[in-house]
Image 1: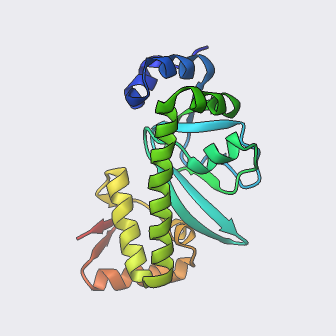
Image 2 (image 1 turned 135 degrees about the horizontal axis):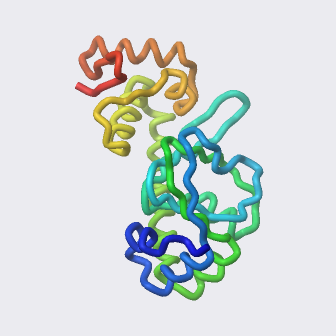
Length: 209
């Protein structure tokens, strides 16, 4: 069954009518629950996801440590999946639904053909690549130059901005995984930020003050 073309047009209006029709004919729309694995390291990338609704986090893992690389928001795709898919290489990242998410899945072989024929699609992924590159540079700077309390505060502020939720209902363990540290360290740093008046921890979650 063709993918919902009205939903595609709503979130990808910039790519134009011909691509809307191709995406609808060749793609499929799926809903995944929060916490669902979308892509894992080493997996062959047969489809390239575009987020229509919800939020996906992309991260890397080494032994028992994880590091958040970036989020994929509505109308965006995963650049790492795109590159792996069109080059027929295994994935080098993990992707997981941060909340209930609606995805448009496009066959990677067809996307490779379309980016040559349709400059709008090439521009879409070029812009995404530029944004992701800037975010990765920011992450690298944080790891090298920022103390953990500053990284944690920036993490909370960005997560509130992306989700649009003033209160973050998130476990310390999840924050620790995203920042590549331990739950005990995160708990200690959160208490420090709270003493400094930067955050408030309530029964509902974490708020910025």
